[in-house]
Structures are given as C-alpha cells and as structure tokens.
Amino acid sequence: MLSYRSRIAVLVFLTPPLLAYVVAVVLPIFQSLYLSLFEWDGIFDPVFVGLGNYVKMFTADPSFWGSLGRSLVYVAVTLVFQLGVALLIANLLTYATRGREVIKTLVVLPAIVSTVAIALLFRRLYSFDPPGLINQLLDFVGLEVLTRAWLSDLGTVLTAVSVPEGWRFFGIYMLILYGGLLAVPRDLEEAAKLDGATEWQVFRYVRFPYLRPVWITTTIMATTNALRGFDIPYLLTNGGPGESSELLTTYMYKTAFAHTQFGYASALSVAIVVECLIAVGLILFMVRKRGFTV
Amino acid sequence: MTSEAVVNRSAPSFPGTGALNLQRAFSQVIILLIVLVQVYPLVWILLTALRPAQEFAAGNPFAIPSVITLENFERAFAQGNLGHYLLNSAIVTLAADALIVVLGMMAAYAIQVLGFKYSRLVLGFFIVGIVVPAHVTLVPLFLNYRNLGLLNSYWSIIVPLVGFSLPMAVYLFQSFYSYIPRELYDAATVDGAGPYRTFFSITVPMSVNTVVTVVFVNTIFIWNDFIFANTFVLDKDMKTVPLGLQSYMGAMGSIDWTATFAAVCVTITPLLLALLVLNRAIIYGIQGGATKG
Image (cartoon, rainbow over all chains, first blue to last red; front, side):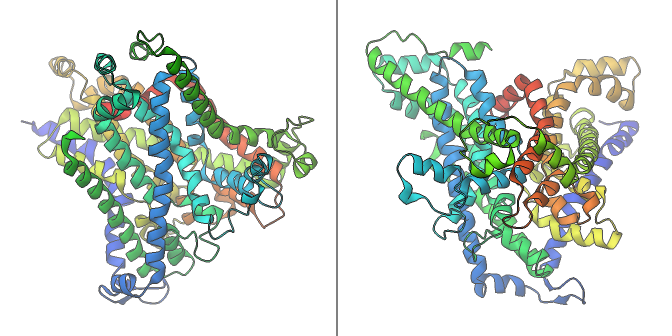
C-alpha cells in the first residue's frame, strides 16, 4: 500500500482543495441548516424556534407555495427549449449536409453572454412602448392583437422571464444531444430503413434508445439548472408585478437581503436544495421504472 | 472528424427521394430559423451599439445603421466607469481561474494518481457539489464575511466561485488522469522521482488540454457571475462587469440604450475571442462531454 512518504504527499495535495471546498460550499450548507432553526434579523440576538420556520413555510406562507409552483413553470418552459427543441434540432442537424460546424458555433454563442446583458437585451425585446423587436415582429406579420407589454402583463410575465433562460443554454444542450446521436451505429439505422421503417420509427426505436444515457444526463443537468434559475427573473422583473414572476430563488433572496429574515431565508434555501434532490431522485426513478425497453 | 463523415446522410439509395428532398429542405429551414433566433439578438446588440442614439430612438430594429459611429463606446467608457469594472473582473477571473486549476489538479492527483483508501469517497464528496444551489450558501457566507470584514473584497467573490467550480474541475482532471498510463509513473519512480517531482514533471505538463477546457468553462462562469458579486459587493469601486452593466439599467426611462449595448459589446468581446480561437476544442469538448461520462 502507500508508503509513509506518499501518505504525507496525499495530505499535502488533498488538504488545500478540500479546505477551499469545505469553507466555500460544505460549511455554509451546515450553517444554513443551523440558521434555519432560528428567527433572526441579523442585528439582535437570534431566537431559537426549532422547526418553526419549516412549519411556517409549509402551513402559513402562501408565497412559498406560489413561488414553488412558479419555479416549476419556469423549469417547464426552460426544458421545452433545452430538451424539446434541442433534441429536434440535434436530430435535424445530423441530416444537414452543409454548414454543420458553423451552425454548432452560432447556436452556442448566447451561452457566453452574461445574464445581466441578457436581461438588458430582453427588456428591450419585450418592450411595448417604444415597441420592442417582438411586438414589432408581431405587428409586421399582422398579429397586432397579440402585441402587449410582455413583462407587465400578468398572463405572460412568468413565461417571458423563463424564455431567456431556455434560450441562452439551448445551444449547449443541443450540442450534447447531437454528440449522443453521432454515437448511434449507422448500419443499425440503415438496416431499419431497409426494413421499411419511417424516419420517425428510426428515431423512436433506434436512435432514442441509444441516446438514453446522454438524454438522462442532459435532463438532470437542465432540470437542476433551471430549478436554480435566478439572475434573469431577478433582473427583469424582480418577481413582479406583484408576485406574478416570483420564483423560490428570488423569494429566498428577497427574504434574506431585502427583509433580512436570515433564519427564514435559510429555511427557504434548504427547501431549494431539497427541491433539487427530489427532482434528481424523481428523474432517476422514472428512468428506472420505464426500464430498458424505453 | 471521421465520425462526422460517417453520418453524412446525403445520397440515399432507396426510393422516395423526392419526399426526402422535401423533408431535407424543410429541416434546413427549421435549422436556419433556430440559428436566427439564437444569433439575431446578439447581432442586434452590435448594430445598436454602432447606431447613432437618435436613430435608435426612432428606430426600426431590422435596419442597418445609416452611419456607423463609435460615440456610444466613448459614452459607455465615460459614463459608466467601464474600465474599472473590466479591471475588477479581470483580477477576479485570473485569481479564481488560477486557484481552480491548481487546486483541481492537486485534488485529482491525490485521488487518481497517488490513491488512498477512501479516494472514491472523497471524489464523490467533491462531485456532489455540482448540484448544490448557490442560494444555500449566500446567507452564511454573507454573515461570515461580515464577521471577518471581508465584504466588498475580491476574496468575497473569489472564494465561492472557486468552491463551486472545484467539483467539475476535480472531476475533469480526475477522469483525464485515469487515462495516463501507469507505466509512465512506474518509470518515474524507478528513476527516483518522488510524488512531488512526478506531479510537476509528468502530471502537470500532460494536463494542458484539460486546463484549457477547465479555464474556458470557468471563465464564462466567473466573468459573468452576478449572484455572488451582487450579494457580497456593494462598494462602487469593487464592482465587476455584470454589476457595472446593471448600473446602466438605472432608473426607469432614462436609460442610454446605445451606450449600454456598446458596454455589453465590450464585455462580451474577451469571451467571444476565446470561443472563436478555441472553437474546435470547445465545440467538440461539449459535444463529447456527455458520451464519455
């Protein structure tokens, strides 16, 4: 096994990274768990309330349930782009004969733009007065009935703050799925086609089963990322108008840093972690249940 | 490249070619549409930045600017303290990148190359960090910084950025190190190299490609970080690029949009250049990422 000398070497190499990780990530998680048992405004002495914050969250705080629900809508809209459209385009791209390399680079471009710049951009795109790009486009194709102030209309604001998130990482997920599709054996597809399978059947029974491992990874990545989505809704509407675009993350942030309820905010942040864990568990459960027959 | 050529689906050898051509044309239109949706907003940012302010106010967003002007860029630098934000972001990005690479290599070396009894467990401990939401650390870090007097410092942003990037970095380095043949290390040991010399003479030089991937991915994350900077930095002089851009958003109605988008252009440029220069490595890195894992 290890000599005494390399046992010291393990410590020398492992301690600094472990320390950085523990200080920045692990310790704060436990601090949050601990803080969530108190009521504290950050100035006066914390008051121990046991599980009081969690009881309040589940039974006496409609804002919590509301923002949880809106977070799920946010995830759904994001996934339509990052999984649905991404899978469609990845498929179509395998049939493309020209320009594949250029297309791959172009669709990834939004991923390097900061969320603040994206929020600035979409604020303009959604603008009603002066008319932004989207309203002008609707006007141009004769759908002026649909033009509206997307970010102040209660019916559209939640979708409007979700779309930019789906848009910006669409390219990344499309590329990952495309990479997965490249791994599908070509002769298998050919054989299926010779047996008279339609393109849809080839996709359904040959390509997708092969794509499964990649598809699962992508689903987990996209879902947990969307559950953590914060910047764009916070910057575009800060949860408004009213609470109509408030997500669990923006609600937690406000509770902590606008209302300085550090104890309750910690309980909310623990809920965000639990929500991510449940999502991963649920995805893996569904995968297992459906087995390997697809 | 060969795998690309293999899936080239031109020249089908069975009947029904007419319908297939129609399908192909249709799918190309859809792809083109998506590319437009992904790229046009960015092109629009650039056009806006180059457009005279009056023309933008009147503006048809699809029109090419009548005159190309750099005035917006001048105003962006003059009003917004943009140079200072860029400097702050550069400092934070360089420091955090360096730490991530060094610490990531060290951890992966200990786990994968040196090896020890609970190395898999430690690896798992790091990897779990990939799914931890940043929100759960905000309140504790804020309070810790306040106690230590670290709010409004570069460190206050660097520490969580490094902590949250380490899991992925450790994972990437570790999986690369698992491909380095054992014989190489055995040879070094025979030559009398200890664990430290082996690290510097074999592992580090071989890691260059992975370093490029890790640095690029993390630079995007760090350069664009909003949540940590927004929480821990309140002082105007310590603001990074994203916070600086946010200050252009300012009060309702009075936004100098053309200058704002000029500033956006400036802040995107470093990452855009990196993406274009490292294009192939990055695109194939993402594309292959999920299949290798």
